[in-house]
Length: 199
Image (cartoon, rainbow, N blue to C red; front, side):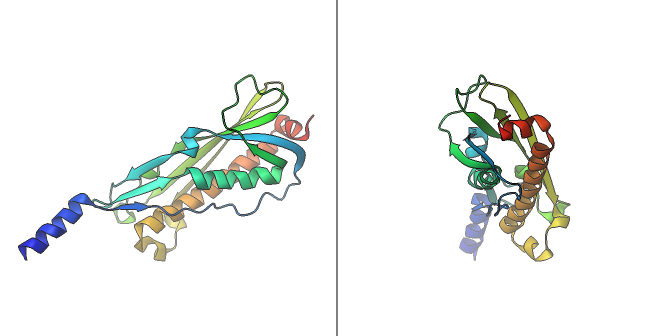
């Protein structure tokens, strides 16, 4: 009996690590016609390799967020619809731009999922924000941001029984909303539409 109790206590102290399952929330590119141009895309380290753990409110278990792969897949889908072709760049373009090409550098500029808590402790909210730095061949720079938020009210009650699925569901909703705001701002900026059209 005592041995079983100590094993149980050790399990709680050690805890378990769970990956939060996240799929790209964008499966199809925007409906807008693609511009006949090739754009170089660079995903900064703060996005491509983002990783954090949360244990707060989940006893001793740890839940791991890795936003890079699915964020990249999401924006690749978006940009492949906006432009005829995209090329992944191996290094970040300089502020002066790269001679002969237009580029976009994507950053993760906000994420608070690692502060999330189990819904029984209150309403869980996850916020995520991205920024795109658009550089023209001449070196001009424009910045576009997209932010999204999701909370417990956006999730079906059946998903609340599994912490990893619950957190992943919230993150996907927040990512989708951030992407929608990003595309909307991009389309509403006249200078960026001129840039997209090659004017």
